[in-house]
Image (tube, rainbow, N blue to C red):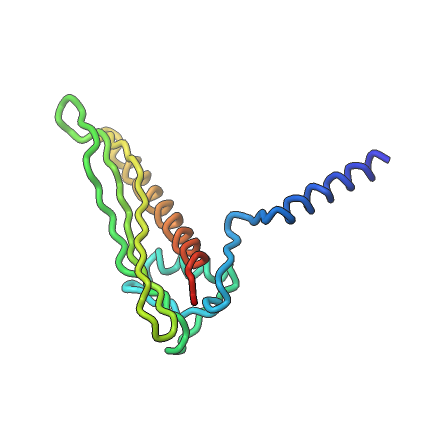
Length: 162
């Protein structure tokens, strides 16, 4: 009896969450016009290109090479850093990392729609642990690229194609 009640409760919870429009985080509702894309970038062997390509594949978007297909173009990604605070000795203690990329979507003969993605992070720099901080910076940059790729897919899902 308890097992039946638990099964019924679990089924009700699943139906309620599906009925309210709940979607998993990486489930993007890409317009049908963008279900096949031509992905181009200034660095087709770069990490961002690979991450966007992977997310397109996970979202069941076909990557094509035909010239008539909608085009997603990824510009150069850029990492800047600015000083946030200093140690009493005058050395930099904290940076703000700014990762930015510009991309555009062109559908048919329409003008390209340009978008910018900017991800910001704070980074504490301790010169006594230079090797560990270098590795931390690499991990932060990788995380920022993942977030930028996710944001590109979210932007694709919000594009008005008409």
